[in-house]
Amino acid sequence: MASVRGPILAKSVSLFSVIPHLTDATASRLSANLQGILWMLMAGSAFAAANVTVRLATHDLHPFVVVFFRSAIAVLLMAHVFLGPRFYWAPSPVMRLHLLRGILQATALLCLYAAIAISPLATVIAISFITPLVSGAGAIALMGEPSRWNRWLAIFLGFAGVLIVIRPGLIAVSLGVFLVLGYAVQQAASNLAGKVLARSEPALVIVAWMTLLSTPLALVPALFVWSWPDLVTLGYLAVNALLSTFAHFATVRAYRVVDITIADPMMFFRMIAAAFFGYWFFNEVPDIWTWVGSAVIAAAGTLLSRDRS
Image (cartoon, rainbow, N blue to C red; front, side):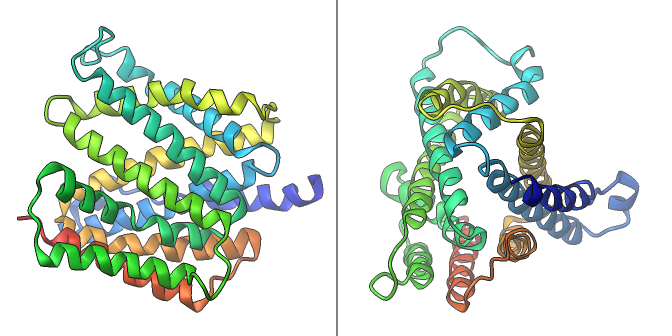
């Protein structure tokens, strides 16, 4: 294991230490559209790189333990929110919804990290693209959002893309595929719960409660497969937390400076980044069906994002 992890760690340092950064001076010279596109490209790269650190960490730790440490580090990163004036510790009328979101987030990450440990990174990214489509279907069915033919067309097109990737009946559907699908459904449900909470709760409070509640929930399954990380693996976990935080920050910045109809199509870059990282670190090469299916899913997500009225 040591002989393998040496070169991998060297590659990790060379890639993770060079994350593009837009200074205010640089941003002022760029058009809003270009700024938004660049932020989304950086978000896609960071998300894909975060998945690499998960795979590297699961070389020595069970995925459930990785989820717990990832969540615990996220709690530390959000300490300023817990100690801030806008966070409340007293029970509120929506605490049950916060708890539901914490449960969904914990179980979603358990599924995702277990899938990353056993499946090609590009396949995981491709199938996870359906998350906003599941959210869209849930919003129509459960939250009374408008039900129009173009929305349903986008949703069904996205699921057709998933079928292209997994090709049930033609090849054996792996456990990893089911885990990613489970992640997508639970993450979509978490997103819908977050949308309800956003009607009365500040965004930082919503994220903070989700992080705080999901961490002890993630500890329960981790205890059954517990082992302590060494310093190298702990470094992977810390980098994962930083990359994930940066990715969410970059996505928010993109949405601030450009319309979602321009930003969302750039999510397909996650697939390109995942393919690159998968080949660089693990010699994984996506097949043509993974590319075609992910392109169909990305197109469906773009079509759905353009219908905002």
